[in-house]
Length: 439
Image (tube, rainbow, N blue to C red; front, side, top):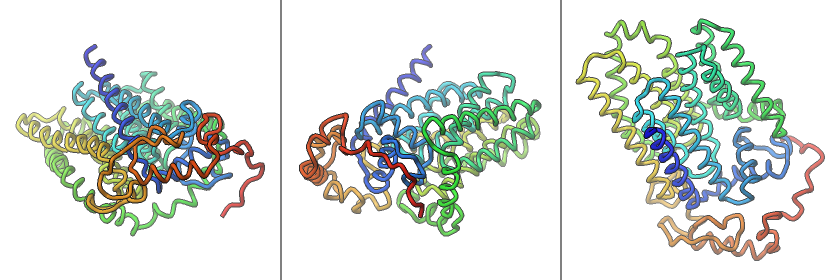
């Protein structure tokens, strides 16, 4: 009972933090493009046909649904992230506990994942949707491998797999292929695994049909935008060169658990029983690490966010090693090193969300970033609610952004910005009847 109450309380803290942080940082640039994609989906335009976008279906579904349920406003995008984060946190805690993690370790690990993916952003964003779905998929795969005959384990894996089909293909495709190949070769009852794949695919197609997305259009769009994932220069740039100060900081935080992983791996070589008993289940942590490296090289997001797949794989590897090792001192040492990394990243995620980190991405903390275009300076100006725009009425921003929004509202008909029925465009019901010419 206490464990459940604590889990719910932490989920509430996560959601509340996102609600606050998300209303402090409208990043514009990519953030504005992403929100516009969700808005186009809300209006009824057909994704990948009537408008071109690189975002995955799950982002469009969540963003469009948020606008329909909560109204057309920035706060709806924030609420979508808060609800998604709180619910996936609780699910992750449940999965880890069932795998065998202790109660405290389950909560700390799940909290770490949310802090450096969702909390740091504060609004509905496609990269963290992909990362969290991938981590939940790995967790549910381990639980399924642990007890294939448990119908609840199979149902959870079906649901998460269906969502994984709908996120970024650079992560989803290799993760699905590697994991299910492994499950097919390692499970005793292979028919369950085949049924899970088929039901998951069918469920994802139902989601696409319900949201008016043609899977063939989605695949064609993925093929067009796949060049970045195949660029070696892009990998080097995304991992080592973009946001260099964040790369250095993330590496320092990552170093303790990397040392712990190296030591535990070396020790595992000398624990024959550990290798023989867990050689199958240890493959999934390795897959998590591999997919994390792919995310670092192709997502072009913060290293601390994409690197969470690597760290989660290391946490799993250390967890399985701990169950076999008899060296008390070594176990405590590795626990301490791992704890340093997890706590450092968790605190950093919450602090950066509060500090409006998203506005400074790509530059050193003391340099002007995209916040200059919205707030007027790289400093923290006095923040105030934007009262003139219905869409941004919960957002707190600096004087420049406030004045710019006020001028836009004065230039457009006031009723288009003040009513919930027609928040932005008066002729928004005139949907296109023909496909746009593709580039």
